[in-house]
Amino acid sequence: MKRPTRSSEFDLIRRFFAPLASGEPGAFALRDDAAVLTVEAGLRLVVTTDTMVSGVHFLANDPPALIATKLLRVNLSDLAAMGAAPFAFTLNTALPAEIDDTWLADFAAGLGEDQERFGISLVGGDTVAISGPLTLTLTAFGKVEEGRELRRASAQPGDDIYVSGTIGDAALGLLVLTGALNGLSESEAAQFTGRYHKPEPRVALGRGLAGLAHAACDISDGLIADLGHICEASGMAAVIDAAKIPLSPAARAALAIDGELLGTILGGGDDYELLFSAPAENAPEITIMAANSGIAVSAIGTIVSGTGVTVKDAKGNAIDIQNPGYRHF
Image (tube, rainbow, N blue to C red):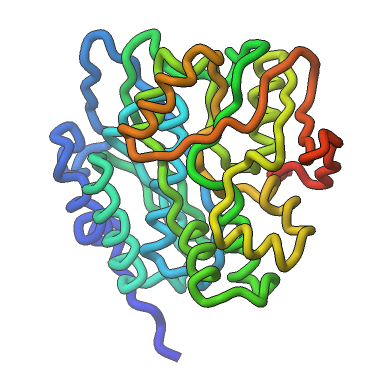
């Protein structure tokens, strides 16, 4: 069997990653030990990081460009949830022997397309060889006006609860990819797998929520779990109406085939939509702002005193959600 061809560490950086650093002068073409980044007066630096491991956060046979896309976008989603504008990122790659130059070229191409779209540049990182699974860590940097950053811990009683976009497609996409969801049309299956592989970070919406929302986060672990994180941080509870949760036509079709998929939709995760609470009097302005950003938002419930998250059906009865979200441990 022919051994995979892979460049040496510095050739790898020069060939695949240094071109991604051309947009940030302080990256010094990745020739130095660190980057020097400038944050203007009146702005605060927002930093987030995520690690993705083959077989845990993505499938081993996923195309490298799509792995790169998801790795970058899940971090951009975190910046969006803080109301920050992205501008730079670092990348750490721990590469097993089977990752060759062809794989890395496709991975770097995926990063390049997305960083141009979102106005962000690579500024550094680290590359090592390992015997374990492919492991990728990306740290993203954003800027936000001082005092306008969004937090989880500020939800107030009476706040409306909103989500952007639609919920559940990505979790259903993972079921499609693993052969656990059948009976769909080709277009429905493609809708789900597309949302799983290529989440849409709601950067413009997050920027627009500053001054309108009390609390926010993105939906990574699942709608119920992440709403629970807001509630716990704020010392509040939440009641949501299952009928108001926005679903794509494909998700509605899947739910019509199997009603048990509601649990997957509410707790499956990987949506990377924004979840936020805001006072009722801000509803008209939120509607206008969301329309201007091109992202639909839906009011799905209310912040109340107490603890926990309650999901109610059309008759007002509580729905038992067995798995409210992904658990990392």
